[in-house]
Length: 168
Image (cartoon, rainbow, N blue to C red; front, side, top):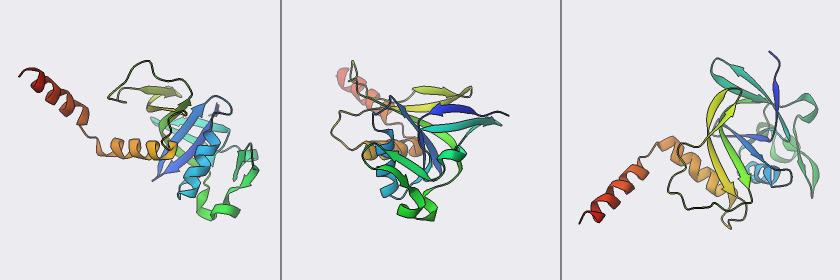
């Protein structure tokens, strides 16, 4: 099976693959560098080869780009030399997609649920992060991943509470 190429950065956080996408120069590699300093792993920078196997999407690093991260300010960073042998791995299942963008949302949302991104005909949960928000991109991403793992019903509970208060 021939892999598809996708522009983006693939990282592994707690054995979950996160594909970071967005326009050129928006900060995908910078976010990956921040995540590396927090102990997470890089799979691929700039180009991710994707294959679809048994309802899973696997992302892997092209041979040419193995074990390097490119920063506009720092150039090519040798991942295992700087962060240790466990900081880079060849492939990872892609579980989530994070899109970095500069546009502000038109309206305030209480939920990130139901946002999806298709890769290799598989729908994956999507988080859209605005790069102009002063809060750390990595902290917002890690918080969202924690929320995903807990499968909390916070939004439903909030809406029920709001409905009950309005009924008074």
